Amino acid sequence: MNDFKKEMQVNKPKRSFYKTFEKGQNNQKIYKSSIVPEGEFNSNSYLRGVSCFLLDEQGNILVEKRADTKLTPGKLDIVSGHIEGNETPTQAMIREYVEELHSGSELEAELARREASQNLKKLEELDLIFQSRGEERKFFIQFFVKKTKLKTCAKQLEEVEGVKWVPQEVVWEAIRQNKTKFPYDQRFEKIFQQVREAYQEKEKEK
Image (cartoon, rainbow, N blue to C red; front, top):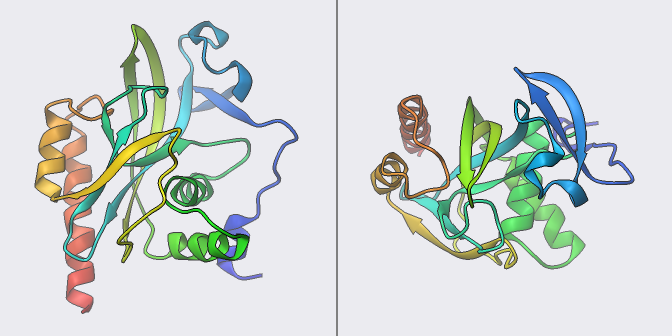
């Protein structure tokens, strides 16, 4: 079995759930149907998520506007989502990429999954506290960067209101000014530099 197939092989539970963590340790399962009320899980617990800085050939980043029904509604975002069930961060990132930006037949979805796995590179993992509608949510977010030739996409309408390609430095400034869903933290500066370096590495390969 090749590495791609191993990475995509997940034993899916009969009922979808998120795992929570306290100081990085497994804590409990929170089923998707009960995730909305904040009181459903310990206030000291963290959920796990993934986010990817998707770069086009000019080094721009794909930016989404979050739907009104989602956490931090109306905020700017990059391709992101929860880690579900027993997924690894990489598996979750590939799934979110396909769900948010592609639609069509099973063959098209499989091609999108294969494309998603290419040039996908792990960056930092940050513990962040999100404020939304007066509630507090704690996450461990595994960040990624990926170079793509994607020009158009079929966005996931229930989660994504709109998408556009934005220059890197404009995105960094939006995060610093708290215009995105991510609460700004000085540790982001290291991630910004890693994204710049990832793009420069690809440019050298041309």
